[in-house]
Length: 127
Image 1: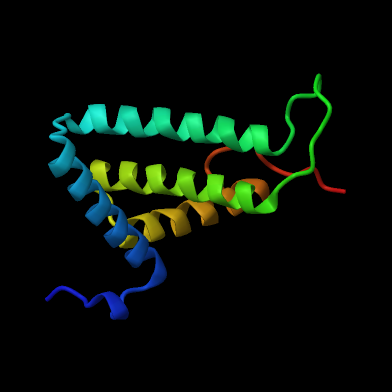
Image 2: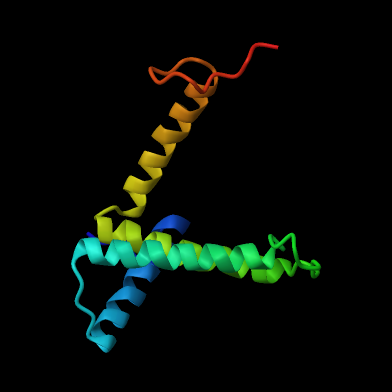
């Protein structure tokens, strides 16, 4: 049985809303792309949004900096999340799988830092 929107966790809601938006967009714009093409387009959109985020935080050392607008920075981060979530959905990953994979990878990243991983070269120097 499908959960009601009010019963969903925050990440599930984000995935649900993104899926609704993408479905509407695909239908109304008659978009037909393969899984690979969707992911390519979403990665390019993420790169574009990352460039917009960089502009918001004065990465151009050759220009006079402007005051950083925190609201714009947050909006760019949300734009990145939109396209990231869409790429997850098109890859076949739902909110639960993303959460589980994140938790495993986060543990692995900590293990690497403290020499507890099979993958070496990340260990912190003993001080």
